[in-house]
Length: 246
Image (cartoon, rainbow, N blue to C red; front, side, top):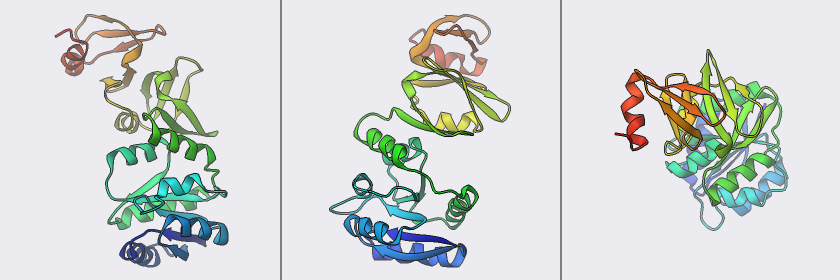
């Protein structure tokens, strides 16, 4: 049985989520609720839950500020929030899960199932640092899940991302290549479009590392690390406009 607490300043929100967990997630037992961040801090220390459902937008002490005060960080954390593009991007960059309000039942079940499959309690320390950094400055720190666990990178060090079958391979400016079991599309959606461009169905490049463009049907890009990357015919015009060449 997974123990949980719900932290949300809206009573209706706490009630709705609690009812959905009871009806559709029988492996979860809600042991407590808090209506603000201060109460949430006390409840986490007192009950030591397996998972915390945390609302972001709360008065006095919001969800992000509450997390910075935490002593105990070894629990699964699922944010609940109304749509906020920047906050959600920061959450995804730090590899946390989130649920949009009103909470969709299938998404809730999937989030709980992920916890069940993962089993072990995470150490959220580094991820919370990444989240706090990205909320205070530009979104430039990303957590990437690998077989060894979560690894943390500055996106400015990413040169090239390539799809290889069901895997994605990262090339960096300052470390060896990294292969991860996520699709290229997931990273395309996450990384800032003003810095990263998908030149081809198999390639995303960091525009900061372009050395030269080689003309052709679609053409090729030579990157600073010597890699040659294809540009598809469909992407050629958009790419040349981006470079101010058209």
